[in-house]
Length: 77
Image (tube, rainbow, N blue to C red; front, side, top):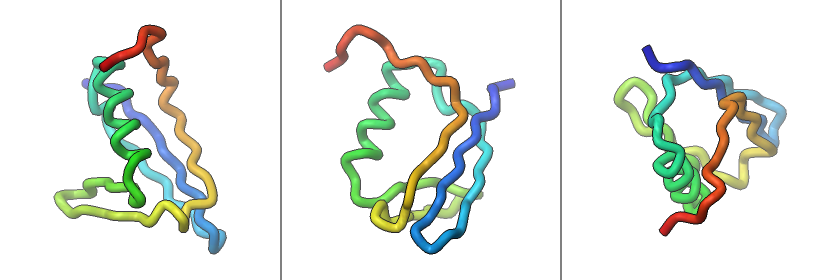
C-alpha cells in the first residue's frame, strides 16, 4: 500500500481545500519533474475521481503539503 500524502490549499477568499492522495511515484526524480511541470503552469491541475480540477494559481494564497519529500541533491536533465 502506498503512503498517503496530504495537501492543504488556502485561497485568497479565506476558503481551504484539504486533499489526501496516495504517493504518486517512489522515484524522487519523477516527483521533482512533476512538481516542476506544475509550477510552470498558470493552473494547478488535479485529477479527482476521474474529473480534472483546474485551480488558477493566482487564487491560491499559499499551499501547505505534508509529504516529507526529499528531493535529489544531484541535478537532473
